[in-house]
Image 1: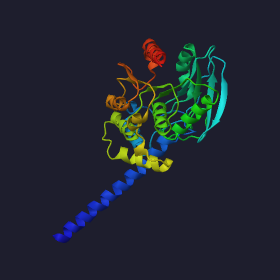
Image 2: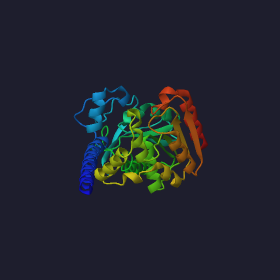
Image 3: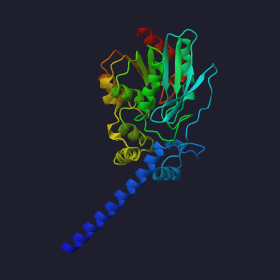
Length: 316
């Protein structure tokens, strides 16, 4: 009887070991695809809610189809293309206002590009600010196909700031959406830049939280796969992904902050935004957009967005 129990235990341990190995292999695939855009893909995998059962299984096993972001539009105002050397070579568009009172540097979100920030840049230009629109590494006209969801992108935030600072500009504002917001927050955590203020839209609370949110539409538990994804994403891209934590970065931000959030967001929870807001110890404002998800607030709430941004800039 005892020998039979030992054999059953060994068999169970062997099965568990095989499952654990398979989970890690799947996590490796997903982590790589999540942090490396596909230069050959023509379309992105649909949201889980719109996938068939077989497509969901394929996506769960091999990861998402994530094309490399391309700039889809050009500014309709005169602009200068600028290449900056950071941790990677990054491309920016510099657009000057007629009588500038400062400069706003704009940073896009995950799987975005700088052309997606043109509408926001137009608002800042109308308010009298020069604008610098930045392609993070792996996007648009910048180098590579890699993204670290704001971790190493924070170095590119500093590079863009230094470039504008070296022009003699003293009134510098940073604007970022989602990953761009997280990159700004990490940059200010690591380097106390002399910025007048920052405008951040829907920053995630931590890398683990943003990965966990990807499992909700599929209605499957996030543990332990989310943890494995974060682990392998960090290993593959050479950084501590568990330590990528905007909630903690908020504690070291010294400049005024306008934090914006859409209350229908299915990728960033209101609890994450609350935690970030509570950890900010500088002058701060929180503006909510009740019907907006993880999307372009300016498009859905044009008037409110302009009013909120104008009021914040006027207070600096």
